[in-house]
Image (cartoon, rainbow, N blue to C red; front, side):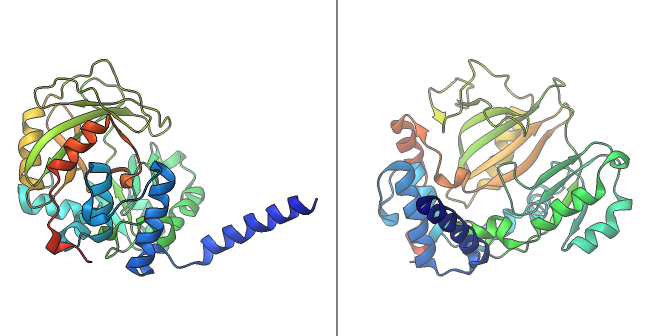
Length: 314
């Protein structure tokens, strides 16, 4: 009985510490670095010097912890990202239409009646399918339940302000309402095409078919000639084959232009009948905590990623 009580007290203490400790963006760099390296060691079984990173997986940690670029801080915000697209491509037509962006729950509630019947709600600084709600028919939606959920997204602790990623720390938690992109060329599940780009050079792409319900969807790598690469990301399966997107060449050209000047960015597209649609630009995929296999491919990606030492915080 004593051991059970001790375990309960430990769990409660841990939850209270997490709940009331400052979010990560308020912590000093040395604290974030240590915590991130602790998680890395727990995940991969070793530690490394951030200034001597070799693999792509390792370099993502150097990138997110130490690489200081104000431009990244704007682009990782799902609303500000569209400004970057407009400035560089001349229009936001490659992005989902924006219906509104809100800075607090009262502002969101007041705007509810003006939203269309179908839309998507997103936290502007979240990723990996978190903090997202699909509203298929507004008149049937549970408004109060949605408000309870959305209210959590304004708390920095529930966003990537509480991650190890430096690029998010200049942003304010907001909620974005935008067009639901759900009808594509084959009428099936939403397909993502994610291009690995290194300072304007596009090298690889992987494709997924995701539902936001089942997270065990295939992720399959291809080269730019659409030859499958024998590689995997995390513990996701790979598909035997995948359809090459209709606007593949245009995706590559857009990726070259938008990724110029960044040591690495993953350009995330959807494909429609009319044009490629940009979902976001991802600088820290999986936070560097999902293994890339084989190790030789992880090293190959790492060699392509050149991080200027002079831009590192320490």
